[in-house]
Image (tube, rainbow over all chains, first blue to last red; front, side):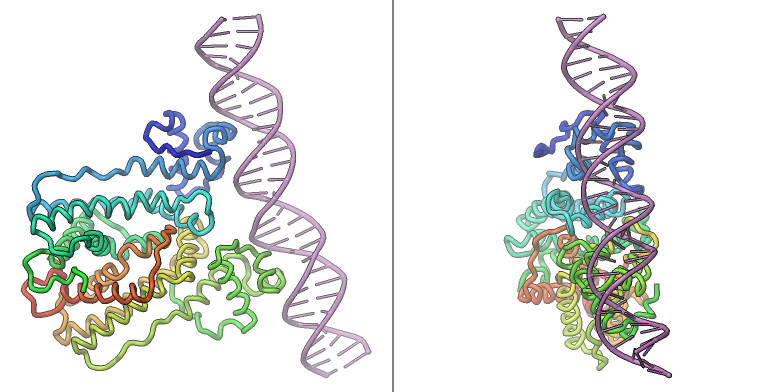
Length: 219
Length: 219
DNA sequence: GCCGTACCGTAACGTACGGTACGGTTGTTC
DNA sequence: GAACAACCGTACCGTACGTTACGGTACGGC
């Protein structure tokens, strides 16, 4: 029952094929029923039940399977300079907007949001949450904290998460909710680049050290 | 598309009672089936079908019904001063966070997001979109534009919507997506007040006129 | 050759739910 | 008070889908 292990080696290749087929059904908007999955993956329903228990188990396995491979590019661990930090934030924003705008992200977030409303058992919402906003902020906080220690950024100690969430807001704005609601918003690489640049510049305007009135700090 | 027919007089009182019952089911997380609604609203299924056509019609009517009564408080049409604008933005942010954090908003956004993924017929997503982020930005843009004309704010002409979306990001940040994904995030009036103040201050740091390098404008 | 295991394909079962039909009750109109 | 409309409650139909069961095939071990 408990599929606690979320390691990459959790499933065999054949099983991963089935999960990929499930993902494909979700992303392409086709209904994901046990029958349709068995047909799409050329496997037996009985096998699906044997492997994943029930439908909830299949969904969590699918979401986890996808989450396990959207680890962001590792952070540069070099010295913290203003330019390096700015470049990292920019790259971060580009990466994030690219992921958010992808069909897979939209489809999985929709699935998780829908389930967060009804299902209490298989909390896909928690999985997506931990691999989405929370993961982003967890990666961001050390960067920002290093920037603060290095005297590049200015916010109160312990407020790195507040700064990270502001950066999130500047980057994402209303894009994600609009995509989730079906707005035919297109995010070309050019626009992503431009938005990431704007958000990064805005962030430094708010939090760069050595200004008169940093508005990022708490009142 | 246009929510033209969304006047309050569209439904009789009894019909509005049924729609309220539907809303209550959605908000409380109970399944909204035609049978459960008939039971909850003490009416006949046949009557529901007669009034709303089918399930899709019922859902759109329900969503529209709720949308028709979250019109924000009217904007103050007085002269544009820095303090007045700041107060308006602050009030705006408080109002928006309060709405977003409400059970009704979360439940309806979940419903609309789920339907945007599958249903193509009754696009609840478009309705929620038009009464959510787009409505907010439509109300915001004239305020910001007036501020720009009055010399209070600084962004390129025609970029009022970009500024509005940045404000949206500063206010909402990751709150909405976390709520939709089931994060037990609590938004007390105190926290809302504080977040609205922070977002407003940050917005003015980015877009107030008479600074050295306003980072809000495009590059 | 024979068994156990793993798997595929498909039939079958139970249930939930959208949608329809119909009898019974209430209120209105003439 | 008869006719009629609106509505409630409920039984009913058809279908989709989760879940289970079962027959058939391939393969490795002995």
